[in-house]
Image 1 (cartoon, rainbow, N blue to C red):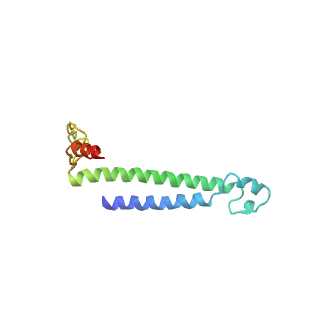
Image 2: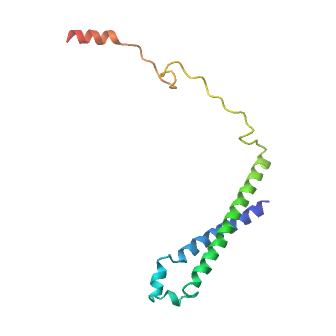
Image 3: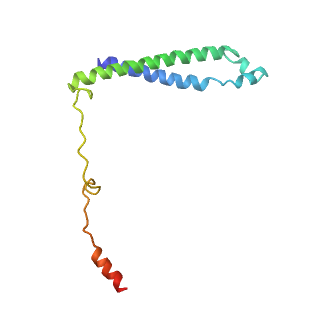
Amino acid sequence: MQFFANLVLIVQLLSALAIIGLVLVQHGKGADMGASFGSGASGSLFGATGSANFLSRSTAVAATLFFGCTLGLAFLSNGRSSATTGADTALDRAPITAPAPAASGAAAIPGAVIAPAVTAPVAASAASH
């Protein structure tokens, strides 16, 4: 099973590199106007319009292969993780209950120190000035 997963991963990586290369080789829609005025694209390997069809179809095949490998890897990793570890899924576990809210805002902060009220010394120092 591990060999099959590695094989699918290698095919996925190769198809991703093929997609990158094919997209970089293709020319945009604006390049067709330059080809009509003789910019040299009409003398290419596939012809003026033949390259667009060949490259776009090759990109579509590589993209289909990439998505198929992605789904295959997701399927393989899902089946392997629960079978080897024996762990239950997140849906099988009991929900985590939230603790009851604290009475005051300062008590809700962990490690907070509630300072005693110091109104008397402040009032005395204000009266002396």
